[in-house]
Image (tube, rainbow, N blue to C red; front, top):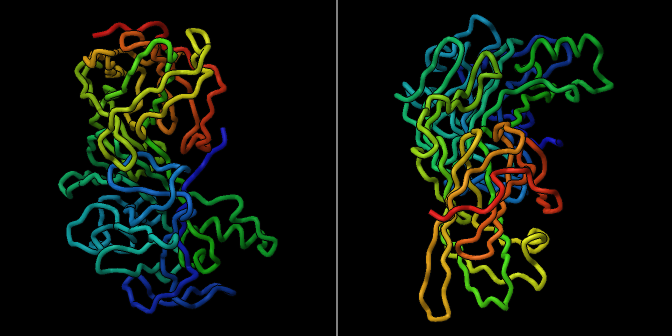
Length: 415
């Protein structure tokens, strides 16, 4: 599948007049500017991202990261560097973290994405960060936790990694990544073999920043995204008036988020410590766009001829925004429907089913799955799941022309 990424790169195009202890002078390499090299972060394309507190997943359907916070760490690229050292304690080994702004802070240094452009501004009193005066390279890490609040006492900073506990509520996107030098960054006809070797050795430093070769971070989604489509399986002759009131999913919610590690493959959210059974896990309720409560959705009757065998050829009703859940092998899903009878009396029922992939594999982080309900009546619901691209998996043009992935197919019992 095609991969879609969020690009973060430190830019040396703007020179700031502020002084900073981490700058020590000029870089003594021929052809490189002797100006101080600030670290300035730019995030992707400002025209295709939007985020507000707890509003759900960041994706290509949205517009702008309006004032959204990210957190950045940078450590000297050296096996002897310890991730438990803060920048206030040792600015040579830890170039960037939250302690630059507040003594004792263990988080990454906060930055916010601008509303009008893609430039990121550092939060806190230290608004300028400079590379040290030398060719000493640094690794860069960044993470995004939506509107979660993590206290300093929650952080576990060891020699090799940084982590903290998280508890998800279904509406918060969690992402992180480490920068890696790209082949295309070396694809410059003006670079000699020696230049390329120097770039590889000194990425990322004042030397590479002066050459406008910046750390590029591909944010990765660490949760599973579930979207919900309902296909009405009844026509106007039935006289049915059916409403979707609520969609809930039982998911693991307690995990440990590793946001920086000497071994990049250890980064991500580990939910293995949440050992509650499926039935004991909390129900996460689907929200509407922007994090609002989900309103009851009127299911208009289907076109003539839509029935048991071809209901998925009809037009679906997209319900709410999406749910962001822990990767797992199965989920319990509860669909609450209300039917208003001709007499005016209402009947409400909860349809309970389990989602599993047909191959027996897990629902994977960074993947999006469209859960499709065929509703023939308030007590007659059929469920299937289709894998659709999201984030790490590609664009978000969702089609309905693929056959559903086999799940717990059949009629759901009403409980």
